[in-house]
Length: 78
Figure (tube, rainbow, N blue to C red):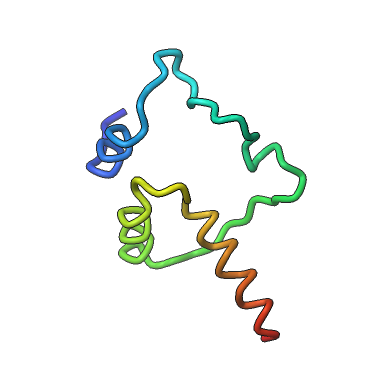
């Protein structure tokens, strides 16, 4: 599979384990956590790629960002 610029940037930030598996950090993934559900939403490509770019190197991914935005929206009582 051809690596895109984003994939190269992510590979530089996230060190490979050599086993082909993602490194473990002592917490289970969201897919296996019953508190989470997978959804599909449509967003503008440019916005999504800019969000991904800005999240590189942070302890947050796009699903964390969307979840926090949804929770904040709910707190405001909309």
